[in-house]
Image (tube, rainbow, N blue to C red):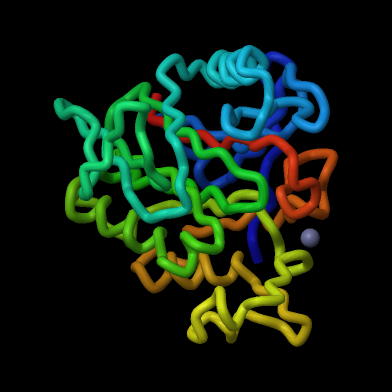
Length: 263
Ligand SMILES: [Zn+2]
């Protein structure tokens, strides 16, 4: 049974925290909602994406609100591409990835890992999962954008491999939280035979709804994370339109932010 996420509020901005990650005072994390931002409909109001048609100045102000809310002056947003590139920010090194895909227009990637204090990692979602991780022994944090494409390519395992190879992490030490995302109540895939590999069909019910929350938990466990160290928020984005943006629910909509960093 997952422990309940905690709702906190700073500077009038609400965010959720995973209790097992909140227990480590040396890190800060939060899953922000769509509330208390500057953007107007259909992006109302705390939209953090520049790529969905919202006013750039409002997105900038929204990102600034989040930065000041959790005292994260260096808050890294990247272009997410539904691929599996892991961006590494390591002490004394410039940003790099295993595939070296740093672009002139900014950083591209779907997972971020760092051991640098005060570098906060942001993932933008509206139905996709943000998976937050912390290794309290090596003092390494990670933030993953896991949509269904990321899930079927197991971006979770690829990120944990980077944590192990580049940062000497032990999967058995990792604390993981799976954020609000499209739940099995709403994740219908009518074309699953074309889109989803057969090995994932066991996560499907009779009405073609997939349980990506269970897929992530199993992928974390298969990579060596202890089941007791995983909490899923189990909040469906489409079922909670007052709290979260949902692409399935609204199509033209914003993205909410999941953030983690070492203080
Ligand atoms: Zn739902």
